[in-house]
Length: 294
Image 1 (cartoon, rainbow, N blue to C red):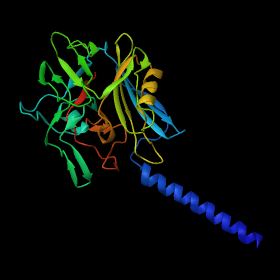
Image 2 (image 1 turned 135 degrees about the horizontal axis):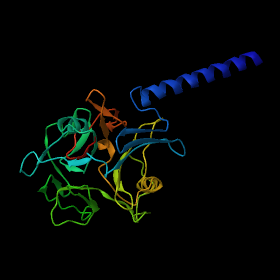
Image 3 (image 1 turned 30 degrees about the horizontal axis):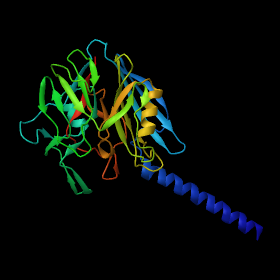
Image 4 (image 1 turned 180 degrees about the vertical axis):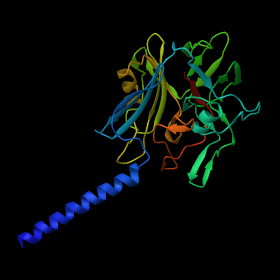
């Protein structure tokens, strides 16, 4: 009887281990970044860091730090495709990086129209006309004033031709501009009223105190056994912990994507995007932030 009990326990353990391994490969997949911390230099003046946390929820964050004083560093916001009420053709972040020969890119502002009812019923597809929710400018063309929303005015990041960054302080001549969802960090402290309970994929951009260093961050989410996501409050603290003094969130959820140029010139996705609950699937979005690096 005792031997049978031991045998049953042994079988149960083997089955549990097998289920865990199977779940890991189903939900984590072989093509996602390893859930372990790492840090490396991508280009002159550009470093990449992967942050992995396991408790109380699994969380994988991807942080690119850019020294704006590095020779050859330049920024690009997605240019307009038309002068219509939907001035942009939707692109994935990989398509944006490839089309404009960039070295780094992340998704940008929220947009409309948008729906996601299933893997075959969604909008936009790549090439479909869309409009960003907030004020947008690219290379001196302030082509979109934004859409009036019930939640009020959206924060805006302005980027000059000489890589001077400012949040919500519109210059006399606008060169590049992109809007965000909300402010996350103000003067080195979390912005008031940030949600501290909802876990989701997130994208954000931040600056250090003197504005020399720009931080692009994407946090993976909605992926069991890999990364549940992060709250706005925890994202703000994560940014502060890495030296950010001011930051705003960009579009999150299935839009959150970080891409770099690979050695063969092809786009390489650094994070694990998830669209329509399909890990690794990129969502076509309206605008993006791109970086030319030496």
